[in-house]
Image 1: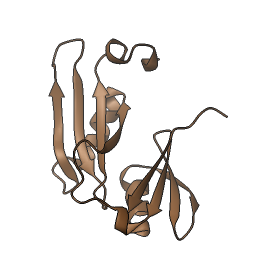
Image 2: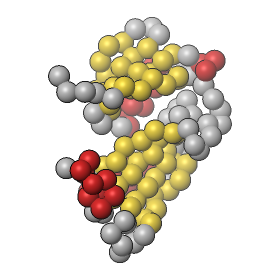
Image 3: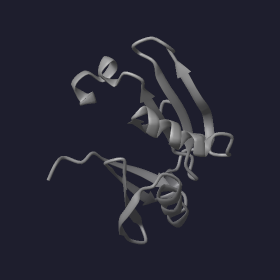
Length: 132
């Protein structure tokens, strides 16, 4: 088995969170109990913990997680959210035309957890060997 990054986050309502991660972000839902559900999201195991008391609202911008996608995947995914109520920061392109050109968007799940969707035009210029 290859290593799988694992992240555990509190959610206000487990059923609502499972629906969001499965339907909006395309996660596969694995184990599920009354207290948590595992969502396989972009190669990461995200444990959605039914723990309303631990939900921080509003979530500080510095407390977020995210994914770096291929440019075409990023454009496709972000176009689904643009203009919608889940958008915290709309899609932006920085350093346009430079080797470090990047796209970013910030959305929020129903519990207020911030999710950054990111891309690099030339991932090897930013991520080096990680881009392979």
